[in-house]
Length: 294
Image 1 (cartoon, helix red, strand yellow):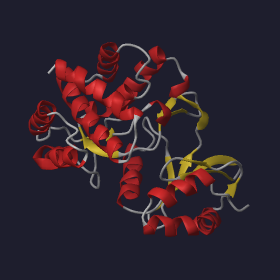
Image 2 (image 1 turned 30 degrees about the vertical axis):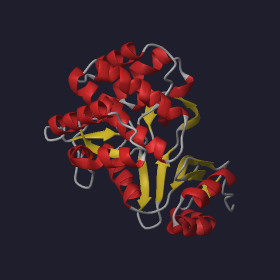
Image 3 (image 1 turned 60 degrees about the vertical axis):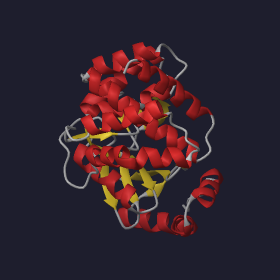
Image 4 (image 1 turned 90 degrees about the vertical axis):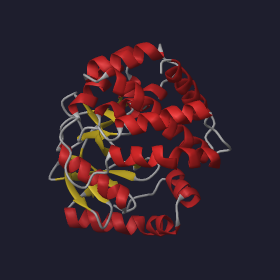
C-alpha cells in the first residue's frame, strides 16, 4: 500500500525546508516503498507527522511498529544515536535504522494518549521521573551541552538577540552568559532529551510512559526541564512546577534554575526568529520570573 503524505506536512517542508528537504519530500512515497520492502513492513494506518518527519503505522510478522521517515542529516543521525544509547530506557525502543534513508523503525506506542492528556498535577511527577530515567551515561556521537553553552555565552546569544531587534535586555543576556560560563565547563556527561515535553511522552505497551522524538545532548539532566515549564504554561503555579520537577527528577535546584533560564532564552530567540507570537510571550514571562530569583 503506497503511503499518502499529509498535505500539512508537505506544505511545511515546501515553506520552511531547503532545496534538499524539498527534494526529499518529492521522493518520500518511493522512499517509503523501498524501506517497507527492505524491512518487510506493511503500512496499516493513517500517516502522522510532526514538523520534520512522518510516522507510518506498519506491521511485520503480526506485530505493530512505527516507521519514522525524516530528512537525512546530522540531526537525524544524532537522534538515531541517542535512541541506540538509551536502548528503550524511558524512551521509545529503536528496532532498525538507516542513516542514508533517514528511516527509523520504532516500537509501537499509543499516539492517541500523551502526557498532554493527563492532569498537570499527575503529569509533572511522571515527566520529572523520566528526566532522571533518561540520564544514562552518554556515548560518542552526541553533541555536548558544554559546547552549546560555549557558543551561546561567547557571542551567540548577543548575535541572535541583535538579529531579533535587540530582544534580550542587557541584564538578561549578561546573566545567561554568566550561567553558560559557570555551568557549561562543569556539565555532566549524561544523556538529555532536550525537547522533552508533554506531547512527546506517550503511553507505552505496558501502560508505562515513554519519551519520543529526542533531540539528544550530553550534559546535565537539569537542561531537560525547561520545555516542561513553557508547555501548558497556564496550568498551575510556575514555582511549584519547577520545585516538583526538581524533586521528582532528583535534580540540583541551582543548576535547574540556571539551565532553565538558558534553555528558555534559546527557545525564545528561536521562536521569535521564525515568527511565532504566543510562545515568545510565555518565554518572556518565564525569564522575568527566573531573573527575579537570580
